[in-house]
Length: 456
Image (cartoon, rainbow, N blue to C red; front, side, top):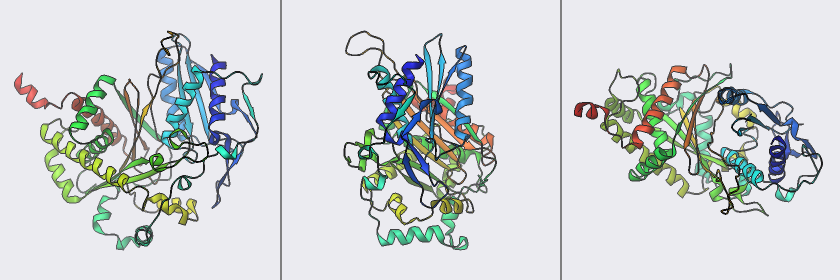
């Protein structure tokens, strides 16, 4: 079985050129990619035999945070990714953990990696060499993905350029109060220690189906709902003096705006196709929300009044995302990348400013996990029963990252992560509890627990 997986990983590497490159000049103002003529897969893949399902769970829960917080050493000699395979021989179950440097790939690329690997597991290529752990040969430049701004035009107007420059470089004293109020000063920027806290939960397929139906009824999406529940949870935990207003963000997949290049199709290409949209909630809006929430309750209250407000915010977030998508690539932050001459300096400068975003939601969609047989043959094939998308804590980025992914015909996994010492553990853990309880409650129709108790 180990040989089968190594062979499938080998074929996946050959299919996606960015898995065969190293990052040169990481500390310079102009880093770049260099193709590797030789790769020993044993550099990048770890195979761990576990003794029981409990042991599998333990290894999984410890491996994820470890990978998130580990640096990729020797980036000029080895690719910025790795795979850990946790094998439970008793149940023929394998957890495939793919970890990568964000400079290489975006979140959707992780989904593409697993779908490609699954395809090669079920359709192994004929062996081309006696040593399946070794890859040699030049990287084909015709199949190498260029930067995302080469896949589509990202026009920026002079007004947008000047406005963005002013926001970036204006003195702090000239920051409008409405903007200053949304800064996440409740999560101070700390460059050390760098350790990611991770929590998560699952929603089964039946509940997920009902939840998505409820989202459509309320003119929103799962992404909009996640943003809304995060806002209400943080509002219930942080008082008006600590967080008078909020700003959150949603990651956007720009593959929809990108045209094929040579033989490369954006939807099937592992690379970075990422932009973002921000959602701002004013002091006045937060006063209204906190009034509905009340005070002194433990966790986000399950009431019809709060639920109505949550759906309203969820619908608004969906509209903001759609409005951004309707604009296409015009005046997108990606278009500003070409005017930045020193990204390292730019990122370092962010550590000297108040944190802009309280949270970020990244929903990478549905992973096609395959089935139990193909074309009615009855032959067993490999399939994916669940998937999770977890992001590392960010020093200067969003205080809390929410990652979501589901498997076709299966359930949803939601992962929440934050940097230790920047966000209080109690706040992060209560946020996860609120997300889980509210998604489950709303999938069941959101009947008020207070009304139910009165009926009984």
